[in-house]
Amino acid sequence: MTKKLYKRKIIYCETDKGILYIPKELKSELPFSEEQKIEVNFEGNIDSFNYNFNRLVGLKSFYQNTGISNGDLLSLKVLNETLHIFREEEEALLTEELLEEANCVESVSLSNTVKGNIAEDRIKEYILFHGQELLNVYKPVIDRNGVDFIVMQNGFYHPIYLQIKSRYYSIFQNLDTEIYLSEKTFTSNVNFYIVCVYFNEKSLEMLEDILFIPSEIVEKKAAKKEGKIKLSVSFSKDSKNEWNKYLVNKSQLVDKILEEISLMSKYYR
Image 1 (cartoon, one colour):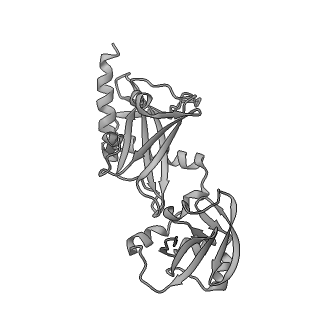
Image 2: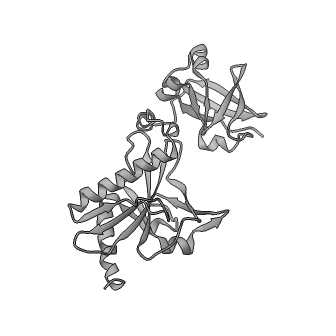
C-alpha cells in the first residue's frame, strides 16, 4: 500500500533550532515511541535523529548540508520504518497566516510548572481587570485539593474556588485536546470550578473561549482511570463535544463568577 505524502513548509524556528516538527497525521504512521532515533532518508542520503515532543532534534548540520531553509516546501512519508523527506517545488499547503503563526515561542521547552504558572497569572489578571475591583483573588498558602485560586466578591463571604488547567497548541494541532486532573486531590463541591484555557504558542495569548466547568459535573461525566480524571474537550464552538456547553468568552469569566457567587446565597446565611 502506498503511503500518503504530507507536505509542509519549513519554518524559521525549525532551521534556527535544528528541529523538524512532525505533522499530527504523520505521527500516527511512525513505528516509534518517544525518545527513540528515527532513520531519515533525504534524496538517498540516510541519517538518524532523535524523536521527542512530536519533533526530530539535532538537524542543524542536516539543514546546512542540504541547503534546506525557511520557507522550503518538503514532502514527508513513512516507508519501511524510515522517514523519507523530499524537496518540493509546489506551493505550500500552509497559508501565509499559519506560516507567520508558526514563527513562535517554542512552548515545548517550557516545563509544565512554568506553563501552569503562566495560565494562572493570566486568569488572575482577567479576573482583576474585568472585575473592576468587585472581585478579589486569593492563592492558598498550601497547594491542596487542586485549588489554585479563591475568588470573593467584595463585601460578600461566598467564595468560589478555581482550578486552572492549560494546554498549548501549535499549527499542527486542532482545537481538540485532553485535560487531566488528579483523582487523588480532586474533590467536587458546589462552589468549585475547573477553568481550562488553550494558548496560542506564538502570542502566548489564550483563545477567546475558555471552559468554565462545575466540579460536580466533572465528577459525574469525566472518565476516570489509573488515578487520573480525563476530560476530552474541544475549544471549537462548532464542535459537538459534550463539554462545549461550558465554553465562555474569556471576557465573560467575571460575569460567570459573579453569577455563581450570587447563587451561593442559597447555601450561605
